[in-house]
Length: 219
Image (tube, rainbow, N blue to C red; front, side):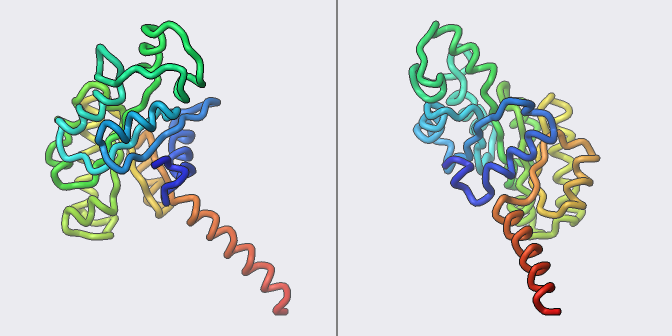
């Protein structure tokens, strides 16, 4: 699934990428995978995705599997398919194109389970993992405090992930629907942060505009 088709949307991730410096003038196509199986990831990459968001990662072995699928040899096992979307349908020197793809590809591991939390140091120490992206709602459920985004249990878990990322030179990322919490975690050092979703933002703006217009006619 492309993030364009996913409920959280490309806007959510792209906002976070822009605000915290992953993207400047150049857009980065990121796909949220339904699964980490090779065919899903390979198809997305061959279609032009430069970033892969891998869901429900539990272990370092799974994280390595994702990296191996995203990266060409000698860093991974991705199959070569030139003249596709990822090369804007151009050919070229295979070695050079593989090197460029390895440098430009982005691997985002979603941290949303208790197992991932327990293995977080091993997961983020996998070479090629660029981002550990916390899904606080799923993680709160897994930790027995569903939806309690300010619970000390969840806060401690978030800080644990962030500390592991700092130790291993990986970008810590998080999704927040509450602006105060989004700003709080940004101030705490999260370098990539997504806020809300395009559907929520558009709905909120539409409701605000409708209410203002109705107020005029109800005078």
